[in-house]
Image (cartoon, rainbow, N blue to C red; front, side, top):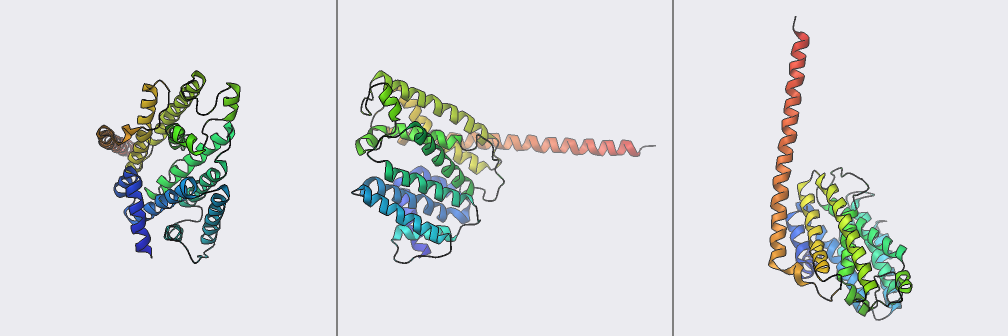
Length: 319
């Protein structure tokens, strides 16, 4: 079964997100790649069930309740029976969890909370606090996932800007999908703003809507800047590259939104163009060079300190 869920997870990931597939292949710890595929593929499937397959709110809630019970039971070492192939992916994933309060557990429960929120929010307004929580929860899930699967066991710093890059990515993600999500019943702009400016979610070309989009873009830019400051201090090169790749994927969208003068559109194909992939390659090369230079500088500093200590020791022993 483990081989079957790994094959299914790789297939879902490859067809859904080439960047995620490439990141898992190249950057994730080799012995954890299959579980990384399972993590992505399971929630890709769960998200699609909630967003697309479920016919009613009752269906969505029943589905997510089943998933929560399944995950809770697995974390109590009670594997359920009569599971779908996709549910088998998450049971295999949890059975391989390497720690009681691991980054994987954080990822699973935070992402489950995000999908559960989607199951309830479809077709209703959303407020500013809910949107802030939504992006923060997703940012924590993604970051903890990356740091669990890449350089597992490394003592990553827990500074205030740790989750900001992934939070910025989700803010951008909601802008990117705004037109499609609105048509599907998911509102990504707070109702307080809509009421205050007497507009509806479909008024994407109105000045108040464009002003709100601009503010979101500026916030995402700021979060990306702070998030990259965190990434620049990360010692694990593979994690740094994966984080910068993740940022670049969404910064391309921000460039397009700014170029369109903050009028959102239904499709942003720029992230699939050859230029985007070339940018990813250049990011990997430039970060690798910077990483090597930084390590060499650190080694030189250590070498000089050692010699200074030897000199001082010799001086102390001199008659």
